[in-house]
Length: 248
Image (cartoon, rainbow, N blue to C red):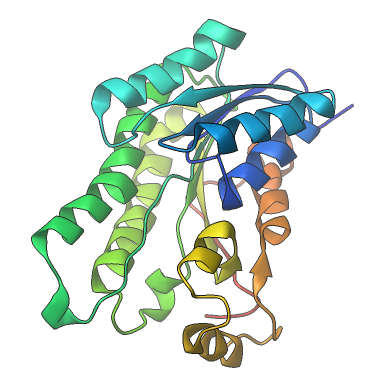
């Protein structure tokens, strides 16, 4: 039997990249998946089509996680469509890099609203429905450990997310809901390609610091999410799994 048979998952920011890979992997293990997107309906529809073509269940739902009513609607879609919620993957996130002298209020609020407030709002909504044995997975980043220059705001959001993961793990433990994070290193996605990160000096520097000597792929992260969503990780909560090719 598939590890997630009968389970229902919400994956935020799942129209591409890591989120899309996680949505497909959860569905392949038997979960019905709500594929959330903020702007790319075509991308989310493509993920749903891939899941259903493989025999899985999925629906695309638009919503901005940094808005309370949207966060509640995303979670509500899981209840309406599938009658329950067992797994939440907080993957929605944005990133921008700039030296200190170029930091702006607008940049600060945009990144913190999506990367931090969005996680709180979506988890708040989900916690009303997730029962014992449920799993919440936050997608953080290795930057919270290695703190690279020119990433003060982005790294700040991920440091906050790591702390929130530990707090919520303790807060929700009496209800037997587990909360963990995955902290990826540099991953090749549509986003890192379109922003010019892949093939840049940034990538070269990242590779130089990576013991396994390569850039990560979405397929390196999705199986970790499946593990954290399943009973295979039933004794883990409040953990940060660094999936970064050995970067610390």
